[in-house]
Image (cartoon, rainbow, N blue to C red; front, side, top):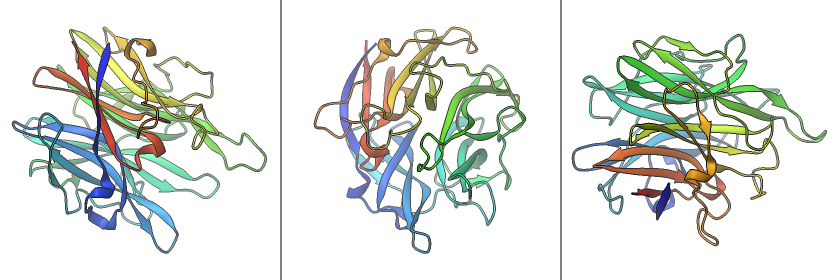
Length: 319
């Protein structure tokens, strides 16, 4: 696979965003319309009373060449959860897909903890207005921690294949304090679940479906699956468990695996390697990929350095 990079296509600092958000456009997720592409992303507002961020969902509409910005959302796509709920402190990311006559949005809700920084779970919302706004199906999650997946279930990516909903997601294996004076860091892997209705899910409990590349403490995030020439390809990002925020050697990179049956995956990062460009927006990090097909071409959206603080870019697969 060879990717032709299209450069950075959206910078949140150059646009007015809803909810007083001023930076970050993380985890871009595409919804293709007849004459444009809507790209949902998570952006951040600073909570004044705590000094911490809250992640909100916004979108940008672009032409099908991903060159021109047509519209940026000016209202809340979906509000954050109520007090004490699983998505009280942010939604990041939200995966969207069409099913029958509605648009489904699978959210990753964030809630703060005391001994560790965060817990996550996957929620479901639907839209009846072409994805302008979403309403929760209920106040709780559809996929969350369980007996052998104790924490940090999130990053759900859903495809309907045949009559079955497939979700690839991440689950935490635990938290580890790698230095005595350091805050705990989380470790998470990619798993798989299926559903007949998109609401009630059956996990392959605690089965890590993507092999580690950099050791048992590898963190895997944001799986996305696309079919290319009759074979399924998964793109995701991976990093070291600690010292990853400012050390380019330990930060996120794009990983790749392929499958012919949606169950067993062969990891092959080199086949689909997407490198950063020295001195550019993605030089130190490539993360949060999203692959999709549009008008016979395969695109990959992704974030660059600083976890998407200054937006996202795209690449197109060369045939």
